[in-house]
Image 1 (cartoon, rainbow, N blue to C red):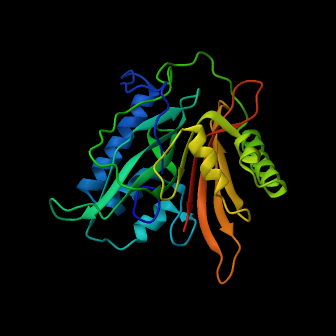
Image 2 (image 1 turned 90 degrees about the vertical axis):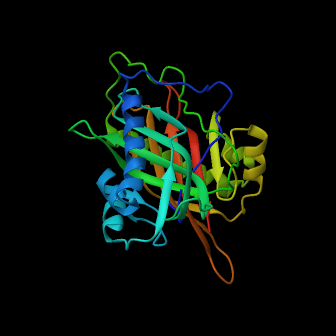
Image 3 (image 1 turned 30 degrees about the horizontal axis):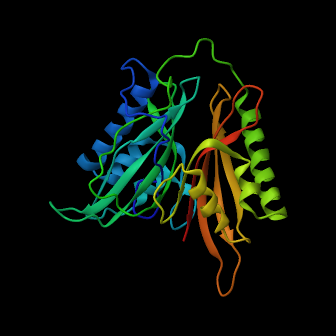
Length: 291
């Protein structure tokens, strides 16, 4: 999520080049919504912007772990902090009604030329509403080290700005059930054998990973190393899922827990999944944030 107690992820794989989407495409319109959202955060304040761009049923992770995003920001007391972010990577479903965005964020004091208070990457799930407007249905992320002197170029998977002729119409409830079943399979495999190989079989070859405290990565060796350092007692509890009407993109999210003494370590996660015809759902982007 885009604030100092949450957010997400990623360095782009080599095949994804900096580019501009077709101005008539759905992914272009989704990016414009993201940019307007970020601009509103500066113009009218973070709380008002989030309340405006979140749906009534949106979800975020906070110090209360999981709550309604729109209501949370309506009730949140204003603070003299500026939140800035920009989209760095986006992807969209074949039905062009569902997509995700990620990129860097930072907070700073509400006065010029101040150093960032915190930095990270956000992960936002967008859904096109009946009136044609794009709204946020889930926002999460993690804090990461600052990337000094870097220029963030926008990119998206090849062809994501091209319309798909006659995209399939899949029952969303069925897709959500399949995603929750995959969640259970990951946990079962991990509990049976808490090794990187048990986890990576559910990952796409081009998966993007961000864990709290680490810069985003798509490097397979780095990902294996990060997973190898998971606590063997790590468990997760899925809180929900969502999917595009075309049945090719979806998400799951929930809470993380590491039992221990004297206290239990807790956190949250978001997984973005994609599915090719005749294949299983695979994770294409994952965010984990353990406190």
